Image (cartoon, rainbow, N blue to C red; front, side, top):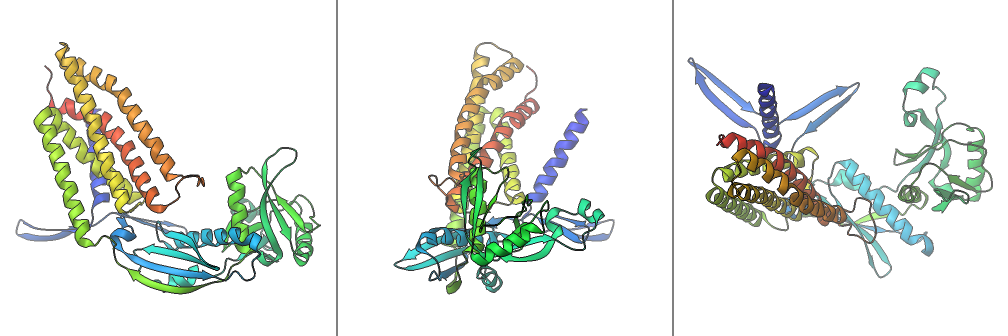
Length: 450
């Protein structure tokens, strides 16, 4: 049983090191007069799923401040947008651009809306992108909202085995230009949130025909070829208005209304500025920051070994493992590392050391009270655990608030703040694992029974 446990630990450690591998490592040696020229390459996972190939590579993604990239400025043409709809239209355009950039493969873009007098602009920062011609073409398109119904060639077998969005292939002729506006409303009987649609005169007639021939069937709402919703038509809808109902939360209904409005209220945008930007910190400053971090970490490890002896050695090994595990998580997700994100990671390292100090001091207290080493370790971990949990849970709550996953308007929504919160939260959770589980096993490894 112990052999299997240690073998599992070794396999996981090798996998973590493989994920963290920054580049290929050449290996050259001679054995029995035979030359070997090998290399250990970074881990890449590739799997063929039917006609689709899924490929996952593990690499460190750096933000605009560390790597540089491109800065784009688009100017919105708001002449045909009513003043009452302008704010929603701009917010919709910003969300569509951010989604398009993410689908293009750029992680953690910074998309902002800027108003200068009567001129409205949207700025886009793309980390690590130098040739942006394809991205510009993708971003600059006006959002296309279409409604689709079931294809004519869908058989019974395909209907049961094919996902619903793949069956909705036939264009209904109803699109974003036929919708005046989408807004969040509430059911008068249940109070549940829903999405209300107001049509143009032409749109009301077309929508009535679409719903009449699709009673009992889903009609898909697609934005930029991606499905937003596929509600089932309950009856023919006339009168120029419709309601989309479902198991929506208020946030779900808001997001759907924004998505529909981005096609219903198309804002033509044109590129007015494009420039490549270098790392705002510069390579020298980044290198100095890394050196400073290594010096600080080395001083902490020296102190731990000097003050706690073999306990300190166990803590240092656990700290190294913590860094390797956390970095592998960053590369697996992947997380775009900016300077605030690195700061969150360094802060979590300090909290990992704090957990070890709490545990070691508790062990020393129990030893002074005359307890055996085994009893002191057991009681020390148990009594320090409450303090460690309280400290880390409060930090995780702060990281959750700063990350703002629900996009509450009264909380920060900036990418750099979220980057800091995300690395801090992941680091704290990992430090809990290494500080409690790994450190305890290392202590038993370094200490013989007394």
